[in-house]
Length: 229
Image (cartoon, rainbow, N blue to C red; front, side, top):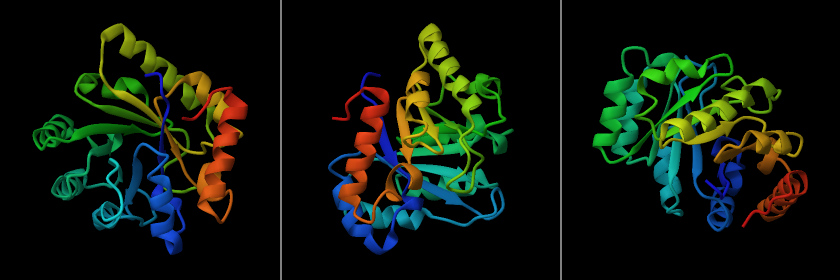
């Protein structure tokens, strides 16, 4: 892909300014990232499928759910009911479920993604890599915002790009974690298709979302030498 896509992580937004921030971002971003945590796979509890209903009231952009949950089947069914455009499942919880859940998501007319923790090798998904629509590489441990960026995870993005070109796979490559001024240049060299931006890269830059976006845009363009349309 030539155009880099941006997907704000709504877990890190200011919920007191929910409508204002979504209405502004609708004009600038490509999708929304919805973190769903069950308090078991990771210790935190965050957004749930009902949140998608609320966002849909003021946005028509695609939404991508990131399932940090132990019971993948239960939450996949919930998100299919919500017609969530992208349903992304952690491969560490997919043993014995991957083919069935990917097929179920596709049968509903939605797109299936998989997410890899920093220590999970890409070889784990080779049995079904030709079926997935998106692969998300965690550049931090899952479950908490504001963690240290794990630079070695970028090698997976490089490897996935080469593999896609060699084999003709159709997946998009997404990175998740500590995407900000300090890391933009290194991430850009690895070459993901989609940047997930959260507190350190967007929402925590200023109380005003318009100013935050302007800062994020400047940070990305100055560090990478590329323009955000």
